[in-house]
Amino acid sequence: MGSQRVYYLDASVLFKLAVKDSGSEVIEKYMAAEPTSAFYATSVCFAEALGMLKSRYSQKGIDQETYLKAGDILQGYVGDRIELTDMDISDSEVFWEVEKTAKRCGLDIVDAYQIVTIKKDYFVRFPEAQPILVTADSGLAEAARKEGIRVWDCLKEQAP
Image (tube, rainbow, N blue to C red; front, side, top):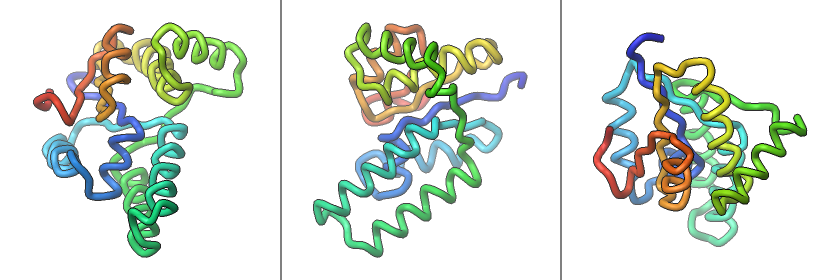
């Protein structure tokens, strides 16, 4: 892998790629400027981003055409720039670690799963890559830093 950068995108960032929202342009420009970098997301974060789209649609924040187009945009990113990666959430040891992380960090299960995936997946396989979690969720950013993960809070910080 060498000097290639590795990024994990959380659901808040995936949502911003699909729907024009505060910070969307920053993320789009950054990804375009990083053509050789690897971008990952967990399938749980992908599902959460779809849930966020559904919620926006259900609350009449976007119309059906925008909702469906946003789903297509998100799927296009996953097919092109973002690879889905996962730890086996059905494995009781993995889920126990997720639950323990959620309690320790005051996070929900999806955010804790993101942290466990980064720590167990890429820290183990590619420690030299120093993966960076990209998020627009300040609570997740703070918790990830406490867990020793590099973070870019794309709404509050300059790009890495």
